[in-house]
Length: 281
Image 1 (cartoon, helix red, strand yellow):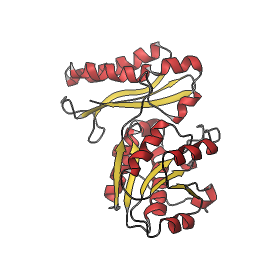
Image 2 (image 1 turned 30 degrees about the horizontal axis):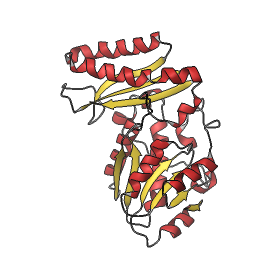
Image 3 (image 1 turned 180 degrees about the horizontal axis):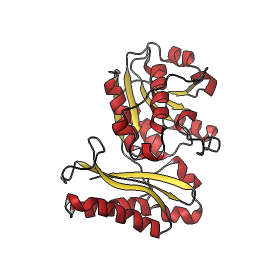
Image 4 (image 1 turned 180 degrees about the vertical axis):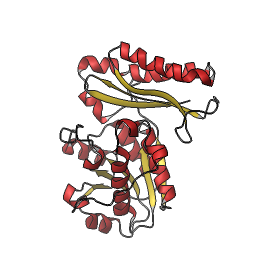
C-alpha cells in the first residue's frame, strides 16, 4: 500500500491507472470502514482511502482535539483490506490557507435533524468532501466514492451535491455494519464506558420499535409515537435529540405510510457519547 500526504503525490500515484474508487474516513477505523474498502475494491480501479480529521465539521464544544488518532492500527488494517493508496494529508496539505470558500448544502435537506443539532456540520462535510473529490478525481475523469449508510443524512447530502455539481462520480452506499447486539459500528463507540456499552443497543431497538409502531398506526399518530420513543429512551438515562420517521426521498415527514419508502432516524447521548443510527423499512 502506497502512503501519500500531498495532493500532488496523490495525483501522481493515480496517473494512468484508470478510475479510482475512494473511501473517505477520519481514521480510528473499524470493520464498517473496512467493508467500504472491500466494496471499493469491487469497482475495479485503484482503491484509495483517506484519513483526515476535518476541523471544519466540528462545533467549538465538540471533540476535534480528543478525536482518536490511531494511525498505526489504521494503516495496518487498510493494508490488510487491500487498499492500494492511503491519502493522509496534514492540515496544511488540505488547507494551506484558511478555507474561506465553502460548500453550503441545500438547507431543506441539511438544516434538519443532524443539521439542527449541529449547525454548520454539513457545510464542513461538503467542503472537505468536495476538496477530497478534487484531489482524488481531479485528473482521473471521475470514479466511485463509497459512503456508509450509518450516516444516512450525510449520504443523502453528498448524493445531492454530486448531482447538483454534475460531478463524474458514482456514489455507492455501503450497508451499516453492526455488533452482535445490533449496535451500529462507529468510531465514537470507543468513548462508551463498559456499562454504557451494554445500554447502547437500546438505540437501534428503539428505532425498530418506532418503525413497527408507525406501520401499525395512521400518519396522524406518528408525531406522538416519535415523542413517546424519545421519552422511553429518556426514562432509561439517555438524552435523545430526535427519533423520527421520515420518507427516504428527502427526509421530510412522510406523506404516506407505504413500507419500503421510509426510514427511522435517531440521535441520542448516553453519558457523554452521542450516537446516531437509522433503519430503513
